[in-house]
Length: 489
Image: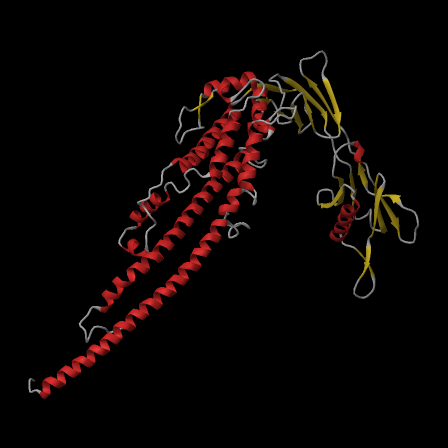
């Protein structure tokens, strides 16, 4: 704690504070420059996050909103009169009616081994086509005595050998069957395998257990043609003319499947996609169009002390305004996205199906309005062509989504993307390894050096005033002495 001004009567603290203002202003300017860098990074990262969310929602295979999956374009659905049969419409499916009779389901091959089957078995062998495995059913205990493996140990050993040899069979214990059940992983009559056992003191292997042969499915599908289609196969599903039939149980007579055209899901996905695209492109437009509010520099610590949190928030919003105006990376991305949305495929473009561009040269430039009724009618009439417009055709021509996916991936999803190099993203390798963070680190180093200089300068000023105080104190003492000698006191 400094006690100053006793001899001079000067308000030393105030004087030094005023003398320090030009130097503190220089530090504040560097801090403001750093804040502007932070604002720019925040704005870039918010754009990257929005683009990532958009990409993950519509361009990945594990999203229910994905438009690149064929399931998004299934406009035909089927109602079944029984849970024994179901059908799903895919590409090329027609909304017609079917009658299905499931005479038999495809089953896997099984072999049930009860305690009696393996009671005297020393070695167990399983053969499937050209592959086989053997396991011993005994082991030595701690006393060196031969003892039988438990059911759990047998199952563990079998499954380990099956996996290592690539044999598509699985062993498990079944209380209902009363023993170990070996089942082929696939269905059909071609999944046959043998289970053999060799008894103690014997050399030959013999078949053991209760074997249940695998069977193929047999299904009769009447589609209204000259004669029904007969499916005989190793699985309980089949895809015919774009329709995937799934057989869940044997039927007692015919199951009716009623087909109908339903484009609601596809229409809703497209509408949501366009709306989210509008938000993304609109936000990018705003960033590149808005003018700089140069009177709103980032607040200094002294200024923040005099303002409320809401006032600080509003001021910061103004400070950020226009920081990315005419940003070359954002403008390039925006132009590429807009160009993609103008694509025409096989004579069809977005405008012809009810998705019309907005006449605007501001923030809404490149956005669209949607006539949902026209879009729904277009999907019913030209569903296959519209699908091609969005995801591409069989000739290899890319659709809107295919091209946009490439743009979004290259601009936002890879660590080598220009914006990632410039601003980086939290929780990634670019979090600190990016241009703006490096610039901020330089500013932090400069600020630290300048603040050290401030402290040295402030101490020097106090030292000067301290010397002045000392001199004034001496003069005051001399003056008092003279006055005493002259009898003036």
